[in-house]
Image (cartoon, rainbow, N blue to C red; front, side, top):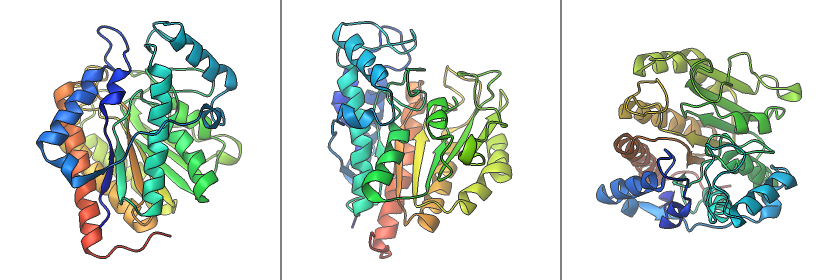
Length: 329
């Protein structure tokens, strides 16, 4: 019976961002501690980290940017492009490892080896533009996964839900002309929250107009406001887009305790959002879903939210397996 795939490895703690930086190795340590303590690691199938070849990354990012990141790490620079994006000598290789591990998870889901997957990788990716780093992110893990789904698996329509409190500008800009990649982002309002993009009128470009949905939330929004936003704007798109694969940029920094944004969700909010995407994946995608860690900077809140998320992924994999889920195509 296929389980939930899990990328979880101490190697990713080697990405050192500098003293006092919120995107720090302790985030992954807390996730590991919580998942081990609650028996969730045992319920999942471990997916070994895999390094992606730089040539594949260059299909999404410019040659110049990939080269700059490699050289900045080799030379021991403290950051790349912006002081927010702290790096160390290992960061380039770990960014390739994060990307490759997401693609390995996609492969495992597509083959039926696992039912769905969660990738606890760092550095994160959804702010990374084609030609520069932004907001702690090096390579656009989720956008690169879309290209991989097309190239290797022949998947046409992919839906991305980004519930990180910060708008996924990198993912949006890389995919915004693609009519078959539906990007949905619910996030803190651009007037109040980094990176200042993700207004509702941003709906895509060219052939991709209509395949971007931004749902900016005012400061102070909590669970009730998020539920209303999902009901008014997001549920219909989840149902109507008819995706073949679902990717989640799973940031947990919209929690009320998180220090980086004025949104007030509880851990239970990520519970019902996870149930909703699992239902969507079951209905349209034969359950095919890969979730990728983005933000979340209050350690206790991060641990609770990830545990809630992975618990539901694992329970759905077990439930679908015992019910005799459809064979993978």
